[in-house]
Every structure is written in structure tokens, then in C-alpha cells.
Length: 348
Image (cartoon, rainbow, N blue to C red):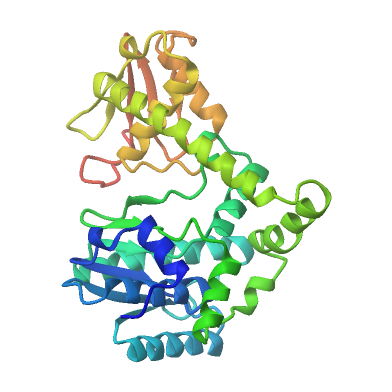
């Protein structure tokens, strides 16, 4: 085998083949430069390992003939490089009811749902996406603009669970987009360009093509590096907090047979509001309760109930229908559905 390209060497350092070359890996490939670069590099790094590299492509159908052309391109590249290809197509009109950023978010959720299904079908241990350092900087800045906490400042996580058996991993976060385009040019490797990525009506595109260049020109030429450094520091701090939260959850949060949760107020007594809120958020997410509509004010209300800052027997109805009741030294949190996820009838 010929010597590795510097991009391939760096990827091998970021995600050593010894960690994955003997298992099934599902690589999400859209056809764009980042994911095609990941395909070429991982194909080289896998070599003759006993595992299998599988490409997963989701055709959202948002750009009609262009979406179908992306799919054909991905299939052709997989055939060219001897890689298995899984394709999922969204039903026609599935995302048509949405527009702008709402449709982009819906497409992203649908994409991860389909990738998880592919991973389960193929028995993949890892699902890989080709998010880059530029994606990370854009995400952090986007979070800042819309309002965020420490976890949001940490940006895109390098790894997280994607279902019971697969881990979602993003080994390309240390690469700039321009580096990967240069890598593909050196290989004479074609890739697809999504014209909707130039649509400045979408927030992410405006951040990428307008705001970040303006910030670099007028305030700090190294703004991307500054955002990445902020993300790393926030991530380190979040890890410390997460460890504390796990301990508080173990001591103070229990799940009842009826699907409700009980928070022992004494176990959280004397803790800073930030940690109390973080513990409640973690418990909420562990139960997969809806939390998109819950803002800082609602989390602080719950923290006040835990800390005894509200009158005894206070009851609040949280977004999603979760009922919070302060009862003695406990905070009871009860969803409007039973332990099997069935919506319960309201009592007369």
C-alpha cells in the first residue's frame, strides 16, 4: 500500500483503525466534500481489516432531481471503491409542510432516525458522520446567537450513543473544510455540491457565508479558532459538571413503578441552582420526557421547588404535561401517560 496522505495520517491518530477495523462501521455519506473525503480516507485506513465499512445515504427528496442525482453519485462511488451502500428515501412530501430552518431541523432528525435504523439492520458498532471544525464553529456561534448554556457552548459532541448498540462518532472534527477539499482535489475525486447551502435565508448558511467572514474581517481573523477553543474549554467544564450530576442523580432521583420520578430534596440541599437545574435536566432526558419547550425560567421554577423557595404543596404543570408537586421533602414529577407510554385519561 502506498504511503498515507497527511489527512489520512491525522485521521488515523484521531480515530485509530485498531478501534474499529474489526467491526461494522456505518459511514453517513451525502455526496458532499466532507463525507466523500471521509469515505476515501476510511477506505484507505480500513485496509484488509476483518470488519466492514458500509455507507449510509438518506435521500430527503428536498431537491427533486438533484436529490436523486446525489443518491446515484453515492451509489456509483460505493461501487467504485467496493463499499456496501444502504439507502433510505423519505416518503414524498414528508418534509413539505415545513420551511426554512424548521424543515432543516426536521430533515436532520429524520436523517439520524434513518441512520439508526440502518445501523441496527447491519449490526453496526459505529455510525460516523463527517462534521468538521467549521461545522463545530458554526454550531457554537449559532448556539450563542439563539441563547445557550455551557453544554451548548461545547458544541457538537465527538461521540454519543445512537441506540442500544451503536455509537455515533465524529472523527473529522479536527479538520477544516478547505483541507478536505484540497485532499479530494489531490486525489482527483469528484463530489457533489448542494446549492441550497448557498441559501442565505437559512440561519446556518447566513452564519457560514456572511457572519463568520464579517467577524474574521472586522474583529478577529482567527475567529474560528477562538470559537473552537471556547468549545473545548466548555466541554471540559461540562464533563466535570456531568460527573457531579451523575452522583446527585444516584443519590437523589428515583423512578417509580407508575413512570413518575421522585426527587429527594434533602439530597440536593445546599447545591448551587446550576447543579440542581442540571440534575433535573439530566433526569428529564433519561426518561425521554419532552423538554424542547422548557426554558430557563421553567427549570429555575423546579429548582426553587427543590430548594424550598416556593410555598409548601406548590404544584406546577410543565410543558409536555408533566405535573410537578412539592410534597414534604420530595418533589414528585408525573407525566400524563402511564409506565408503558400510554396517555392516561384525565380524572373527572
